[in-house]
Image 1 (cartoon, helix red, strand yellow):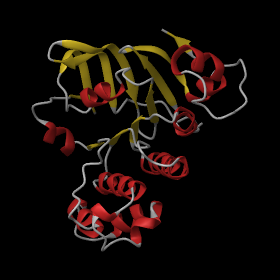
Image 2: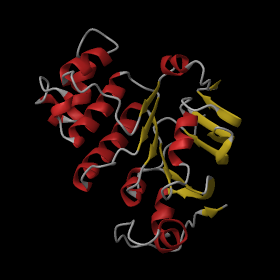
Image 3: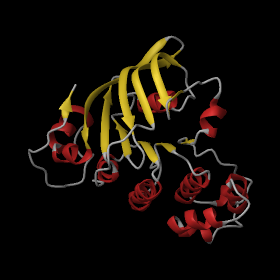
Length: 258
């Protein structure tokens, strides 16, 4: 579990968020917030509404009702460039890269400044990319592509980073390397991070807080450490057996159930 961060005004807030497709509600009455330097995970079984929630939070999918704000400004799905200018970056589960372009070309396009100091700083977190500058993205492994997608987002110096299913199709060993890197950057640079993640134990280990969705509603929320200690109860109620590693757990700081 990540260490707690000082309380401050949230970077992202969702109030009674309801969203869906073609008039059919997929998530309803979701309330959450995340502050600078904090990592929030959105968890739940397949079909729970995790990605729909993230798309609505990012302004990619219009809300049906409720309110989402980033740095105090309402998110407007008709003007996503405004959110980008305010420091929001969204990494989709397909990574959003161009197979015919090289690693170096992606990084160069993502830089906000002509000098390469920021690029060097980001590559220190993902040293494998430094050795792949001339390689085309289509020839990279899944893990290398995901590292590049995260690096491209970080080069923009985001205030808010949203990542959808980072571990999708990746070996657990790679995920165990990348998730802590994101947590450390959030801490070091005050980035608010929202993760949708299928590796529940790993996500909770690097998060400050988490919300659990089931059937489109928040059914469990709390501090990440408390949720880890409630392993058996969380597994049996919402995930099914085997999603967590074998951490020991206790009874203190029980998460709230909605």
